[in-house]
Image (cartoon, rainbow, N blue to C red; front, side, top):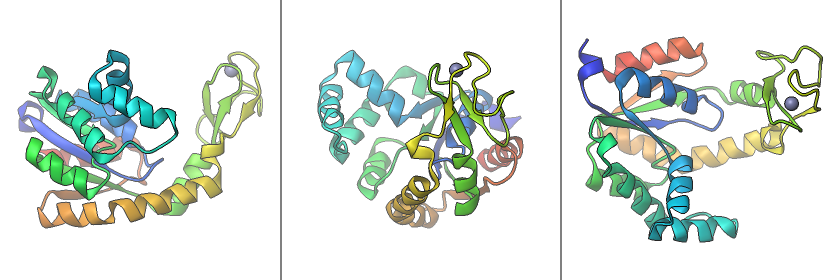
Length: 215
Ligand SMILES: [Zn+2]
């Protein structure tokens, strides 16, 4: 069982709504590697009040994108922590070429898993999500239905579709993602680190493929 013992440093690439977060969770357990999601570490850095955290918070507070140098700084700080020595899974980073090049200088990467799915499948998957207006519980009109249509099982609140989950919004985010990551995919392909995974399968199947690719 070499794959479990070997320390793995993984990047997860994939469009919003493809199931990166879920895969990152399962992989981090299986490979005993630390999951690093940029959303989480930004929140942590801001809470801990580090210099970079404070700067990032300023940008986010104004609704602006956090500049590369700050993002890179925060990720680098995170990678220095003890729990990354056993391997890590990066979810949401790098997003740009500048970030990828900076990461190269900061850490060795073993593999880049690229989750692929056709746009219409993602749009369908994301736009079937519903959320409770009262308790925020999540539902899905295909795979996780509430007992009574449009009503939360837990608190009887009204279920709605979030603005972010509407088909037009999802399509826009997919376009942005493609433009952003195209150069990254080429970059890791040339380094022979890229492995494509079919994310249209059941999550267990995607997970098995990912484990195979990482060993
Ligand atoms: Zn509810």
